[in-house]
Image 1 (cartoon, rainbow, N blue to C red):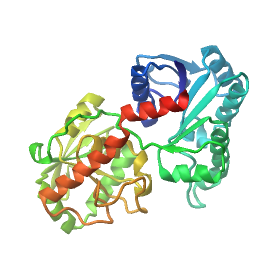
Image 2 (cartoon, rainbow, N blue to C red):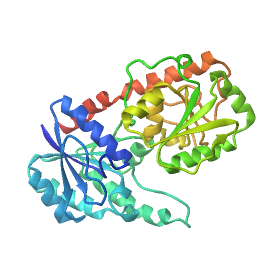
Image 3 (cartoon, rainbow, N blue to C red):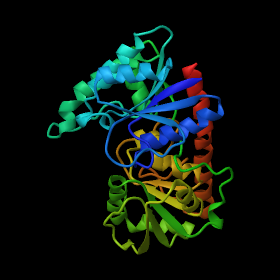
Image 4 (cartoon, rainbow, N blue to C red):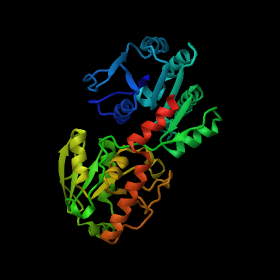
Length: 353
């Protein structure tokens, strides 16, 4: 089978959705499904993936419909995150171009992975005013789609309320930096924690770490962590956080990130619990068997995740023994194992067929 994947960008561009698409393409290739990528034309380095790629001549409905027709396939996999396709996330051209392609021939099939639906925010932020049109675009795409994948239960529930003809399938995101077959027990790893991701996510994590109560630090000492390793684009972070020194590694290729995660005991992140299933950072921690510590208190988790069961969050007490910490990390790894890259590829292949 030949398909077109539409993505916001591809490596070496730092783009979680693009990394997801590129890894998925490799897994689909193992299933006999070959990908040609279609991406918006932008500046920066050329994509470095082992697949055919075509930049869009322009962000217009006509250019998109023509590019898809030129690819000569009747299967399209769209990775949707509005802000990756247009300023303010208002990518009307994407929805209209896909509508023209979808209805321009027989037996054409569109599958959409909704990494995002639409933004929300208080009245003084632009996201408040752009939310209604973003919602219309997402709903239009859901209506056009023959298969729908949502990365969070929150998104799936919103789509169900739209009463579209297809029922969304919830598949949490997989790790973009590898999936070790048998992670080492925490006690056999270096005594280090990791803060990983892009600048905004790491900034929020460090801000919260600086305000953590001393009692939580004391409880986390059961893992013997004596330093933090920082991975990601340059960030003005302190050389020390609550008595723990910070070692800055900078941006690393996926294989090196995997090596660091495989040898760390704990991973910090700051992400809304309700949306944890779409966090690539969280997925990477769990896939490598770390104890994931989420520092955000914005709501409760979903998607089969329970604070204190598969990860440590603000709604649960930190583990007070190594055995308890190891048990949580193991349960997190087991939860992740239900939606690995390979399992996700199989599920999406079924949607495409």
